[in-house]
Image (cartoon, rainbow, N blue to C red; front, side):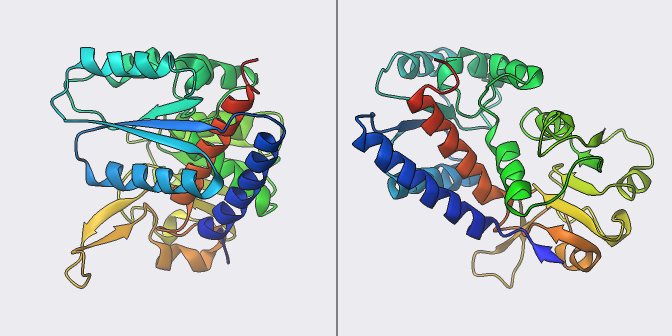
Length: 293
């Protein structure tokens, strides 16, 4: 079993981006600027956005955080999105999800200028990805692809099973893993809550990508010997032995599954750190106008 160490890989990627930023600025380019809109006081979202801001500082980006109370109206939030769309200094921005229930996430995502949609959620970027055109690939799938590349994991002709069909991870991951390039050329099965015989389907996977949000759901009897296991899940589980009162768990029971896998991601320290690298990479592309000339 080999560990797909998100901490080590993300540190390497951020060092590479920092050098690229320095060279870009030295050649007369503008300092990349990433902004984030945060609504409410969701603990996980606040932690994640804070990590993004720290990463921006590490690699030489400008970062801006725009915060609103949870009771903001959809109209006011859309005004904030329009303001960032029209701010020439902002290269890319994100609206941190989830949003309060009274706000339509789809409406807000569609209001983001596709040229600044560094989360890769806008229908235009999703459509371009599906067509194989240059696009901002959503950050978590981007991070998973980078893990596969840097570990040299063969994907061509393999059976990839994805658990979860979210528009953020499961759906784009299934499309990316079957495209005619590396990583890709897999035969892909996408599974979800209505899938029958889920365990038996997972047992046929050479590469299993788990993104369903149920802590330690996948156990060793879901895995065939030598499978590559990518755990996207991250949940807080009550744990009285921890000072914080909770433990961070993935969707995979790591201790149970690891001995049976060829490669596996830990939680924490796996895909989550890679997600931020995807966002930073997209922002640099936005600053250079690589996707939209």
